[in-house]
Image (tube, rainbow, N blue to C red):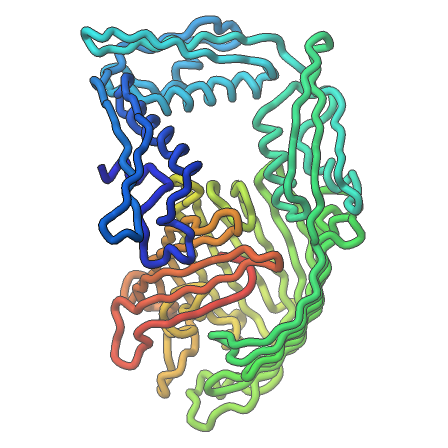
Length: 556
């Protein structure tokens, strides 16, 4: 019974039903559940399952109802054999590797659907736009055995005809066309169409997006219609509130993600908080001179008060990037920053006192990344793996290097839920006898690293028990993310974090902090919002027990 209830959308009323909308009787949802129950049985070999019409009874409390669904299970069937016919373009040895149905195991209807999709996929990618795969199922009721034959009608190979774009009133056609992974005259490819959709969706310019193939059988071509509906890409927002990191804050943000309809990104932001202020203006052109080369620049000013010192800095950065193939990319950036450490507490450690004064940092950064996520903002599957390196000392008064390895993987589970695993390792140190600036050290703890503890708490501290960061970091995050209200892009999650910052000579595995907790995420019209609570699982005396934090911006 628990498996059947787990397959249904209709649920019993719970504590948060007034928020989620679950636990209420909806006839159309119940009718959908009848099909889900039938599919559940078919996936477990019950080919003769019958699901009757539900009956409704009023419960004794007169305020709720009981839904009764009659079932007749029948016998359970086992798969005897799987065969293929009609295939000429691909041999049995190739197609058999795609088939997941296994003889001598319980029959599973969903696996047939998966097999058909896999067979269709290899044909679509080979140009066979009109391929059809028909499963023929033969049962023997006496032995309760099933034979499956995949009968393939290949059809002809098709090329791409015209690619038509419609619905874009502001965005230039070239901004859309440069994301299309097919050219006119190419052989039809299903995976290329799928990737085109992913790339257009990642622009965050359109909703919805429709890609409609239109075969012309006489000419053996497929025209492609791309229909988009533009959504707002420019925002002006004013706000104030309380940040778990910056305390009371006021903010103004002007962002245009599709400036002039050319795909340029332009942003100006100002924040003023109780302990910090931040001003930034940035620009990015993802196709500089209409080539797959990005160009970006930013100018920023930061002022922040820490427990034992204050810092103010002004910087400028210019960057260029290029994609290599479909998923690889690299970028190089030059940054120059003037930073001042001042208002140092008289009881601060020598490490902090030695940093007093103004430094000029001139640095070059190189990033290499491979990104296969299906959605940059809210991925369900795929991964992003990157190496970030920085070398400072080309002029200026500081010299150091930083290298960070960051790997994140997404694994779909069911109903748009996903498991997200992420790990990162960072190293940094001063060069040529110069000390590493304290603001370039790694601070582990807080909503973007180890949730449930204070900023930098999972790392070295000075004689006053104030965090001072480390020259090394190791961080691991595991999340299970699930939809709460899908139509509003509102999700929940549970997580487990582990990691620490440390200095050279300390072991990687000793003294790791462990936390776990839960949170909610909402992809609002103005960007992602995170609210997450974590609990310190191996708390030491004087450490944070638990922490509720929120942030506005991208997910990690």
